Length: 203
Ligand SMILES: [Zn+2]
Image (tube, rainbow, N blue to C red; front, side):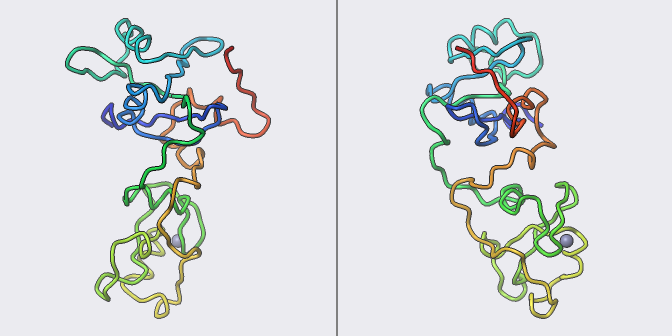
């Protein structure tokens, strides 16, 4: 995975996980001062960095989790915290294999079982050869077995209908950190603890 695509956990002002974005976007938010980096390296507690202090930190950082810009070395953050928003500014979600998987919560829309990404496919509800389009409204997450069984039949012909009507997601109301756990960073764990977990917010 290239550095700028590596996943970064996004926390809101209450330090609740709200999103996972790519490092490119996380650094963009840091550059415009919409987010600070949560440095999770410290043994106890976390330190917060704005752009200036993160660049200072990056300069002396010896790890390989860095990207190089024309004039500086920037360490890829693992966690950022938004400064002003409870959620990321609303943004159109790009249609992609991964975002369909996320919308459908990594759950096959035919058998209802949850799978790892490698065991999932996209299924055209109305098959392409019958005029079905590659859109949010016609594509669902399907396991390979169901996908093979449905083949290029119409739902009624196959007797297979998606569990949820496929729709374009608005924001990411479906953010579920556990769904992204396979690509998560160990330093996210304290923030994903869920009920009962306490995150100490530095003063
Ligand atoms: Zn299935």
